[in-house]
Every structure is written in structure tokens, then in C-alpha cells.
Amino acid sequence: MSKNLPNFESIYVTKTYLPERVEYSRYLDRIWESGIVTNNGQLVVEFEEKIQNFLQSQAMHFVANGTIALQLAIKALKLKGEIITTPYSYVATTTSILWENCSPVFVDINEDDFCINPDLIEEKITGKTTAILATHVYGIPCNVLKIEKIAKKHDLKVIYDGAHAFNVKINNTSIFNYGDIATLSFHATKIFHTIEGGALFTSDKILFQKISLQKAFGHRGDNYETIGINAKNSEFHAAIGLCNLKMIEGIIDKREHLFNFYKENLKELPLQFLKIPDEVSYNYGYFPIVFKSKKIMLKTIETLNDDNIFPRRYFYPSLNQLNYLKNSQSCPVSESVSEKVLCLPFYHDLKKEDAIRIINLIKRVFR
Ligand SMILES: *Cc1c(COP(=O)(O)O)cnc(C)c1O
Image (cartoon, rainbow, N blue to C red):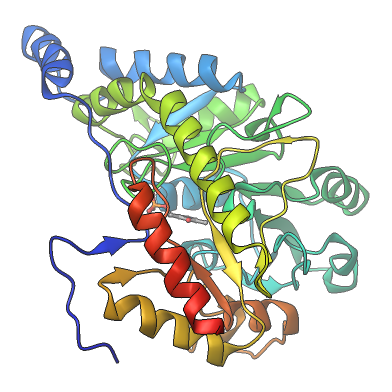
């Protein structure tokens, strides 16, 4: 373990950006004028419209976080039984399935893009399978066409966890236009954030209306129509989102620059990098590197930690190995990648001298 404890000079895997306070204050003025702070106020409505416009996506619900978005998606689609899912994601992908009393059935991932391997899905489908819930890992899209084909053939619903995929497009089509429902997280650690927040996208108007009800207790006035939950988000969060939306293009540009800088300077090392397919317009959300062995990955963590730099083992563990799962399922590719992957510090205002320091420290591990 490292002797160094994090301090204010530490460099983490990500850093939250905030808008100018004067900018945020203008929105606060509007909240004070209206006196409305939550329950689908004017800023929430404006935020939903602006995001749909910006992403050129189907209709969106702004909700409290990305996890409740997944839970609502499972609930709204009335999923039961087994849900085919990926072991290589954040834990919320799996726990939302368990939380809704369904069973996750893990299908291993591709070695090159870390997304669910569509060629292994069909052999896991049983009479109890109701859906596929897959993650666009690090914002790289799943093979949405193959998955759609399998889902049609077996009459399964598809949910995409797009928590990492803000502004990602395939052949100029928003990634959030795929799947029966796609979800997004606006958490402070994500590329675009509202501090806490999340979203659901769907083109199905009936489903969209149902989620409107379910996210707000299941009633409209005195009309109690269905079981709901409180998944709403507030005017204050929407205001942060409206401010941040004005900055996001500049932020993505800077991240693209850093992505290429890291890659150019690390490319001689025996590391696996994220590959961005030609048809994908990427958001430069993460900079993962996969080492040849766990040993050298751990050595790299130690070396960076000694210099107050804290990369993250993301994703680790492979979710099929969570100790509270009832049955053991094996996913060798995901288990192997999880043991050897690190996400490097990656944010728009990471100083060039710090990026160079990180690069040199990693190079030193290999010497
Ligand atoms: C962050 C994340 C979530 C959860 O989103 P929250 O807004 O933090 O609840 C779900 N899935 C993935 C893949 C994530 O990275």
C-alpha cells in the first residue's frame, strides 16, 4: 500500500468542473422569481428540451440519478426472470437488476472494445429470459445492430446503460436512439454532469408516458394510476446542467487533445488502448489502459500513488464475481481485463506537465 495519503495536490482519475458562479446565479434568480424548486419546474423542462436538441435524441426524462434510471427502465418494461447482461460495467448495472428481483445472466465481453460479446448471447437465452441490459463501455457503443437482431428474434427487450456515452454517435445517430430504453448518468464524475442526475430515453410514446407517472409516485393529481417512486430531479440540478451544457463542447475538445497526447506518448509500451471505431463519434470520456499482467498494473498504481497520483481500477471487479451473487458464472475475458485495467487521470484541465509526469512514471515501470 502507498505511504501517501491523498491531499489537495493529489491528481485523481477525474475532476468535477463547475460553471461560473455568476452564470449559475442567473438561473437561481429565475428559481427565486418562480418560487418553484422541483416537480417538473421550468428549468427541468428547459433542460430536457435542450439536451434532446443537443444530442439529437429521442424523448428524454431527467431523473435523480443513473441508477434509478436503470431501475425505472426495468420496472417500466415489466421485466421478470432472467436479464442477460455484461459483467464489465459499474456495479449499478448489476444491482439494478437484482434490486428489481430479476436474475442477472452474464455474457462475456469482446477483447477489443470491452462491450458484451453478441455472439455469446444466444446460448444464454432460456425460457425465462426477458431482456438484454448492456453497457456502452467507456462510451464505446455495443454492437447495437446484432443485439437488436437477437432481441427481435427472441422477443426480448433491450436496455442500454449509456452512463458513459453522453454525446456519442454512430454514423451520426445518437447512441441514445438505440434500445427500447437507453439510460444516462449525469453524476459529477461523468463527462457531462448535473451534480447528481440521470436520464431515460425512449421513442415509445406509451412507455414515455408511463415513466412520467412512475417517476413521480404514479399519480396525477387525485388520479392514482400505478405504483410509482420518487425519481424526480430539481430545478437546482437542471440549472447546473443548463450552465454545463454551454461548456461541454470545449471540454470534449480538450479531452480529445489529452487522449491523443497520452496515446502518442504511451504507444510504444506493451499496453492495450481503447479503439474508437470509424463510424463512432466519441466523447473522450475515459482513458483506460490494459496491462499484460496484474503484477505490472499493481506496480504502476504503486509508482503513481507514490507521486500523489490516483488512477482507478475501473472496472474492477468483474461483476460476475460479486460475492453476493447466488450462482457462480464464469466470464474469462471480463475477469482477465478487470484484473489488468487502469483508468488514467483524465479531465479537461489536467495540466500538460502533469500528463507528462504521469507518462514518464508509467514508462519508468517498464524500464
Ligand atoms: C455511473 C454509472 C452508473 C450509475 O449512475 P449514477 O448516476 O451514479 O447513479 C450506472 N452505470 C454505469 C456504467 C456507470 O458508470
